[in-house]
Figure 1 (cartoon, rainbow, N blue to C red):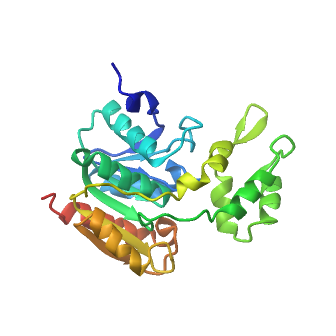
Figure 2 (figure 1 turned 90 degrees about the vertical axis):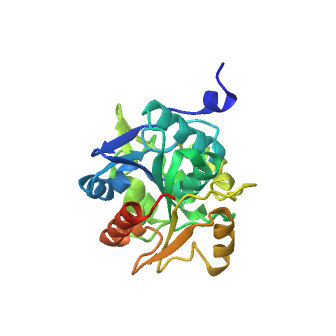
Length: 267
């Protein structure tokens, strides 16, 4: 008989690069596996089998009304079982970093090493309201081109890079443009995206927290909570990088993650 956890778990879409030591890569809110393609290819050339996943309600993975970190962690477990991976290292950015933390705490025996990029385990109040307003303003019944969608987004979002990041999610389904992410469900669960990651016991695998030098997502008073949950955590700061470290300083994050995975003993 299936556990309720397995019944709720979804089969995630993914892209695989290379062969070798398994590494799962989990994107952030509104992201998809392709955001990490350059990094994944570099890691694949360094002897890793990189699995870049689309998390639930993102990319080409299934859409669902249910959305929280416990479920997303069980999706990762289900994915590893499907791929016959007994354990793997897990890297997650932002929302993906919270998913990675929850996975490592829930399934420590399946987590070799953990890399969390620019997010702490604490609660974050909703702070994507402008992006949601912009996305909700795009009426896909009447918008017929990416440039039309970009014009609407530009009324809310000045930053071209952010708009291009969001527009990567537009695709043609028949004769209509659609978002790859499940905007309806994300609208309904934005509180869940910011929820705290906590556990009664800690996770003792080698762990690396990466902070963007120009980002305020990880602050000084977060370190105590991080070390309570992940007592073997070490910390690194990506020079000249904001929240999207992998876009702002791609060579640094590749070299830093590769060195951590290759040179850190699993104890």
